[in-house]
Length: 73
Image 1: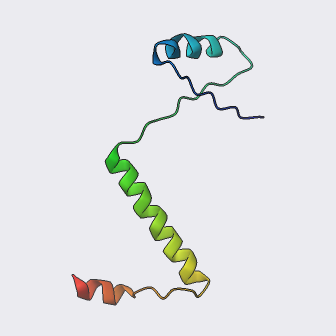
Image 2 (image 1 turned 135 degrees about the vertical axis):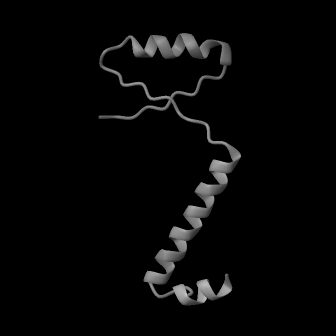
């Protein structure tokens, strides 16, 4: 299966274009979701946390222990 991304420049043409693409039975149309600023902030935070874990696993960064984190609370 191949993926093709279509960006519709004119907002007033988007409805027509989506319906046209959906009419082809050999295409699967998935609409992209726009994230809210809170969702983007959470994604950025998770991405940073996963990066920290990867660095810790490779020995490039030392993370705090659970005990140290709980002591800070």
